[in-house]
Length: 340
Image 1 (cartoon, rainbow, N blue to C red):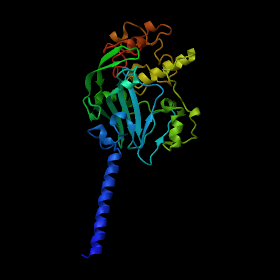
Image 2 (cartoon, rainbow, N blue to C red; image 1 turned 120 degrees about the vertical axis):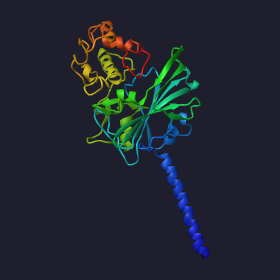
Image 3 (cartoon, rainbow, N blue to C red; image 1 turned 45 degrees about the vertical axis):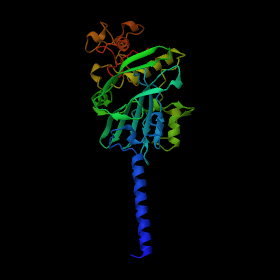
């Protein structure tokens, strides 16, 4: 072999090696919804120190108008969108995410809610992976060092303590759900579906800008009609101080939609109850007004109707939402403490 051919071959070999390294790095950085990982860090969702939750390329933070109550745990939500794909916009139902998308929800408690500088403890990260045949749920539990989280299919329970905004120490036995329990809420006509990723929930301002408008400008959304957040459905934020009775009613409906309607709707696991709390329901009887329970028992607290207007102490709905008894409380999963 002459010297010039040898040099060309070496250059070709180096080029192939470098290409392989670059391809390998690219593959590591691009999450794969069809290939679940043992550790959260393997997906490459976040840049730098994992516990900082700083989103990497193609990972977008989002907020909802009416969050699900989870024993006062705070949440950091993100979605990963594959390159050259868009989310199909729906007016009110769950959005149609393209195959390969991943929804990411991190649960954490501030060590001291009155002192943000005290830091936080991340407990779990729940993923919903949009695969070829539908959505798949995965649960990752964070370690004590807060440098990674490990796949856990059986769920877990462990003690958690934090200092609340009132300066008082709170303690609970935190429950991370198993994958079967995930299906108990994420079910619509027997299909596994995401919760919270709807136009009503996502149409809101974040850092002074409407997040739907922001995503549209970035080319992340696909819509069949002209896009204007002002003309799209928007759920009220139940955490805001209400100024009118009409706003209070809207906030109550938003709270019930976020915390109850994933089961209590005509297509959900509690469809047989005949009590539907989704925000689109307008019939008072189906909302539980003066409606007797389908199955009586201690869960009714000897009360006769789901909702008795003007008499919360006589309403089964209020009784069950205020209870911390596992055999009485509603929702059945995802909380142990009453939301006060």
